[in-house]
Length: 338
Image 1 (tube, rainbow, N blue to C red):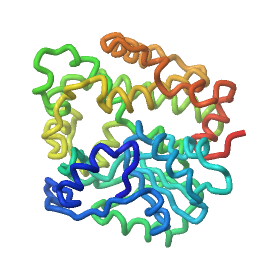
Image 2: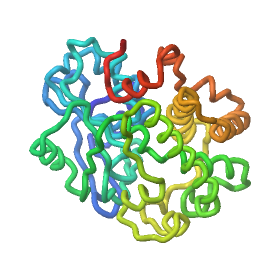
Image 3: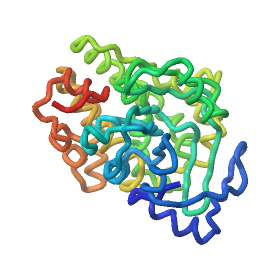
Image 4: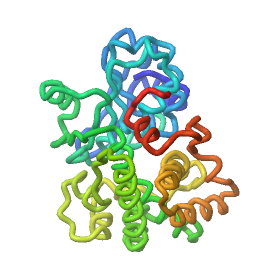
């Protein structure tokens, strides 16, 4: 385990606990010794590096990794969400990783707080894609890192990984509806709130799928995506007939409460600022309406007294303001910047 500026806050508690993380969960419960070192030590000691820092922390991680030569390394980001595109910005070409693998989701519902971790149910399936094609033997070798995940679904490109992340389209309608609800901190984010927002989620996810269709039609680039409910059932091997029943009954969701601090929550920092704002940028380039996501972003931002449309991951903020739609999708797929 390497400490980075994005995850350094947990290191002192883990060290004080004897370099042990205490894990609660149905499958991996117990105490685990971890070796805490620097990024440099990790680069020297292995040729496979896993980044498990949330999307909002990818920048600081890549800044530190880019100080080293990873031309002989496989870099894996769980999750991806444009990780390879960001890596192109940070690495010199001669130091760029020999390959990068991204996932659309984490292998399990988990939270790390100091030296304590909660690991819920593991996903039954997980979507992955690689910058450079892998052989069947390489895929089988990689699958050994995830013995608890029954199926690794290899998608055709990294843009599909970005578009397969359904979290913003589930989380934001829930956040929007309940952020002013009295006593919301005692509500289960999924178990109590989600069943009452299914219609809004379905409408929002239909917008995502229509943008993907527009982008594929305009660029000729195939993007592999499924609807949010089919994705959720695949992730957890559920046979629920409705999303409300799924959210209410899934063990992995039982202890996840509505965020006490909405502004610093992953729903705002990742789902809106990193993902949804960029979705709007892509949709505009495809000539698609952004009225629905802009409504959510604007109204949530107004409640938090921040302009999330300007504060998020825009084409201007990442230096793509003059890029065409085809170039943007190519960048998501890991192509070098022009």
